[in-house]
Image 1: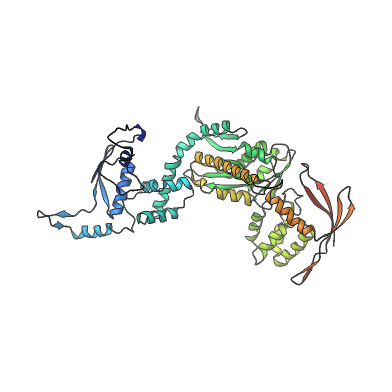
Image 2 (image 1 turned 90 degrees about the horizontal axis):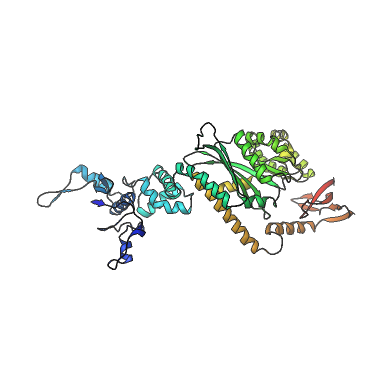
Length: 513
């Protein structure tokens, strides 16, 4: 079989006349939705489309081919294992070729002509809809559509090439990034973009960057009205050029994730974390209120939080993620109930419960309790954090958002930034829709929490000590749980109005046993 094709041309440049209808003209082009329909005069958009079309046709026919000529305007392929004929027309075939022909007809084997580039052309629509299209899903899709089993390696390369088809190449993406960032900043007021260039590699008008930071204006504005808590985390980039994506997330009034700031860096080092957090402090937190930053115990974050810009008033407070603290303890001290007891200890909000749970953990694993004692308890426990964490014990929010961005991490850098923008837009649209369907001034989370606390509080006994200063005597309800007497605890509490005047918080100033 020999195939000739025209170099790529825009379909819109074709002139219609009365002799050829539009439907007939469109029918001249090969349609991958009907890959088996190839007739004399069929046109193709590119040489890759020609090769893909013939390959799909050969898959349908359960045959393989070999290319004997490949030029700019001509591509010639023939059957790989043809059968010859005698002068009388009787078919002849050698024993060796017969075995190869039978091998050729085994459709469940990896087809030699079905290259990763052709597979990429077939799956590009899936990659456009879902950047995190799994390799095993590619294998299953090709098996289902064409009856061909491909290797994991070929599917992996096909996905990488499909990403290039849809989002462009990695090198070109880096070249486009500065102009894209400029447009992003100019079209979205309040958006911040910062660069750190490599002075040794940058030459004249060509700059080479080490880090890039961006934060969208609406997200920065929203954080000023949200709880003063940020969780930070880093995750690997898995494209052709490796790196790390750093993310800072807050919480909205409905206790859901508020993505605020991002940075692409080479590695998680002292320098990269310091650079990222300095910009978070300058552009996101600013110098208007104290903010708590929750993270794991990475050495780079430790160093960054000790810098002068972080200790300036109003101060930035650094707290540890309880999940990471617990994981570090469990590496050396394991036990059937150690994991649960560490968690209960960390989320305790009363000194009485904290002390009781400390003793319970010591009874199970003294080593685990000693290891926790070596970490300043103000850094990891809700009981001694002074209310700075606002009840947030972990970095789960930023880690969950990293999972949302998992597919994005494999994309070229310009596409990565672009998708963070559009997913932020989608976040705002969803929140706006939810707000429009919310009754009253409270968010669903706040309303549910208030109802839960109100139900619990109605079972307490309260005596007013001093109404003017908001001081009360509270006795909890006594009860029996699993044969153990609980409750009947007396606490002296004092209400305090927050600076914004939006909510009341109760501080326990004394506890009576």
